[in-house]
Each structure stands twice: as C-alpha cells, then as structure tokens.
Length: 256
Image (cartoon, rainbow, N blue to C red; front, side, top):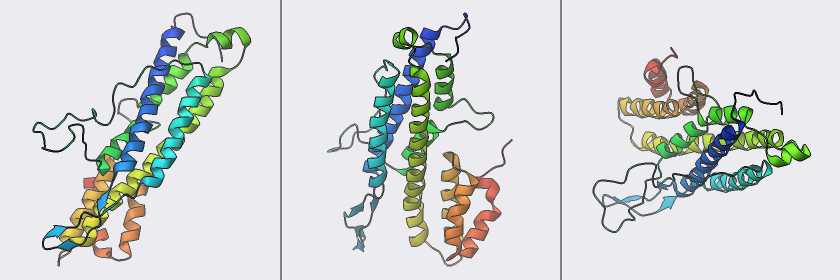
C-alpha cells in the first residue's frame, strides 16, 4: 500500500476502518436474525380467524448470511484490526413500544419486510446522487487512509491489501443475499395481499401493486427489480399492472 501523506492520521483512520467493519459485519448479523424470524401466516381462515400455521420463507438466506458473518470475522483478523463491540442490534434499532404487551418479550420486534429493507440500505455499495455516503463508502474511505499494522510495516506482508480485497468481496456477497431476501419478503407480504384482496373493478389489485413497488424503491431497489415483479404478475393481471405502470411517478419518482 502506498505511503500516506504526513497530514493524514493513519492510526485514527485504522481505528475508523475497524469501526466501519464492525458496523457492516453487525448489519450482516442482524440481517441473519431477521431472515430466521421473518414469517407469513399460511393458515386457512376458519370462523373469522386464522390457524396459527406459519411459513418461514427466508431460512436459506439465514444460513448463507451466517456463513458470511463467520467469513467477515476471519477477514478482520487478517489485517490485525481490533474491532470495537457492536453498539446496536435489532432489538435497539427501534425504540420499544410505549405500552408493554403482557406476556411478550420487551425486546420483541416484528420481523417484517421493512426491517430487511433497512439492512439492504445499510449495505448499499454506493449512495444515490445527493444522498449521504453509505457505510460501505465510509469503509472504503477508511481503508484508503488507514495505516498498516506493525506486522505489515516490519515484515512487509500486505495485510491491508489482502483484507480490502477479501472484505469487499464478502460485503458484496452479503448485499446480494440481503437484496434477494428483501425482494422475497416483499413478495410474501404484498403478493399475499394482491392474491387474496382483489376487487371487482381491480382498483385494490392496482393499489397493492403500487404499495409493493413503492416498498421496493423506498429501500433502494431498482426499476429493473420492480419490472421483474410486474412482468410476472402481468401474465395473470395485465390491467392492474398497466394501471400501476401508468402511475410510475408515484412509486419511482425521477432522479433529480
């Protein structure tokens, strides 16, 4: 790695690199917990109630994220970084409810699609124009300015170069896994509403689709992601899809 300008405090940036690594690795850990807990009701309505049957459609993603979490811990050790302990988890991501629910764990959180969307935004490699830098961009900046470890200075082992290459690869993999998990969680949520809540004039179907597409774009998904969903639904409900596309500026406003 090239030597740093004298005015750059490489040790401070090395500490910042460890902090940013901890933050991103913690996002992966919390996303893993979310994918384990996300579920949808699958029971059949009986006398106005649903049976307590649940489906957990994201468990395969949880297994993959657990593997990536372990890999990120190993990668951190390669560069002799000393990451601080995480400062948050999914129980502190939102403030607890004002009124306690009897019999419920006070740290309980509803593992819905929007929780996964927050993790997706946290793992984004780059931010849209005009938005603050993402954690990934801050991590990249710290990596460029961090000073090498004593081992790297004394022995010449390119720890930071190897670390940067491997960590970036693992973060990219985690982003892709969370992206797919979020798309599936939104499909499980809104797809059920679309399939079970149609109206005679089709307005409800279109309304659900608009909400679905807005949920995707609000959490960093692309127009291509939205079109992929709409093309599948268009086969069985072309009118609702046409109406949804007609109001695209509602759920995918043009970039300024």
